[in-house]
Length: 233
Image 1 (spheres, helix red, strand yellow):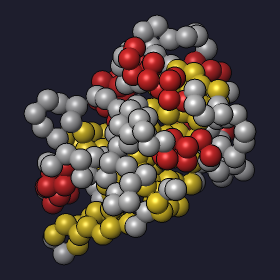
Image 2 (image 1 turned 60 degrees about the vertical axis):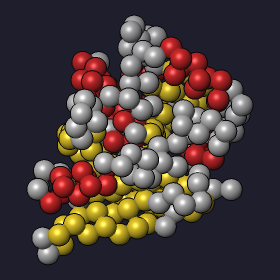
Image 3 (image 1 turned 180 degrees about the vertical axis):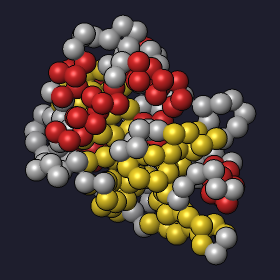
């Protein structure tokens, strides 16, 4: 096992793009680097200029060194060195299926795995939360919520926006009951799950009522248990 903690922080929703006036989750992610002026790289799922600009405007208010990585074109031919010199990778929300397809073309799964083992914190919301797990519940296909095989850095499945989109809970339940997705976690908008060395360390929240959940099948039925998060002041 690596001598440095391997940290992944997956948000159901929140951060600068969903809560521009509520920086609690973004501050929490930056604090986990354990140093002043950490370097953080934002990876949007697509080359959305406005999304990148909003990231830089938000993180300019923090003590950090912000950069971004788009693949249209990438900022450097040496993506591995670019990522490995960061303290935090922060992945935005968008179309997970398309994002992962692009990543695979650029060998990003192997680069991100190496970064995790080196101690780079991997984080993100929605697509940027789903991507780290074995499986995710995604809306990448218009008109449906479907299971998606992801990077597998964390065991099980993940469903974001659990309270923010009305079909998330019933569709995750259905996929579990039909055996189309393994047991896992869900997070409300404003909630995040923090893993260290592959184990769930805690849940945190930027909103007083935001929750995280463990879901699985027991006696043929879906069992859902709340995980009370620590509210971030």
